[in-house]
Length: 232
Image (cartoon, rainbow, N blue to C red; front, side, top):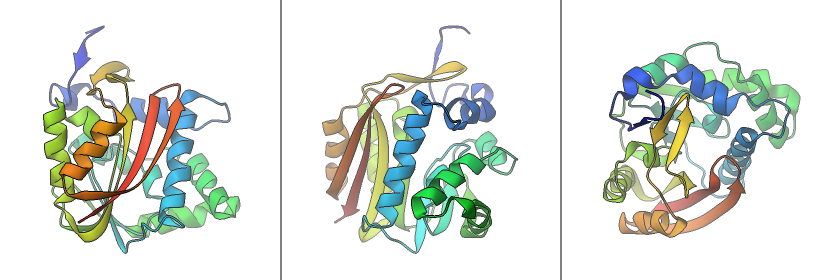
């Protein structure tokens, strides 16, 4: 098995370990690790997007999240989905998200309110779905499509599918790992090689108007981009 590159559909349910994924990328300790940089980049930009960024919505639909909740902490009423049953099961278990919640509460102005944030999240997640989602006011997908799609053509098709969930004028936000070909969760899992202009083109071809792009160099991802768009 060592050195093998796994695709999302190839033994993914058997080989992908949600707990390893959480520990690898979302431990959020006090050190300045590459994984902490990724998480802080996402938290800070999502906070900005859902507060001053104009991407407000009474219902957020999160697509294929994996076993994580960090991306939901600045949102509102939530519907979330994933194609991996093991990821949905892991969401109901006791992974310690307290440091992440404290960081988001610090962004909001009061680090000590994390227990209120935890209670709010439990009330706000209305449904957990296995990749069968209704039309949405706002769609969020982070670090997902590049691992789920076997080619750039498949990536474009998937993006069109996400945009088709949106009502006109509503928003889509996506974070993409750029210039990388795989990610590690004990084993190597496949990811298509993306450039910023490829993601922008896929959004525009899917019928979106670009609203903003934030990029940052990250040691673990080389380059990450959070893009906001609205359906025409």
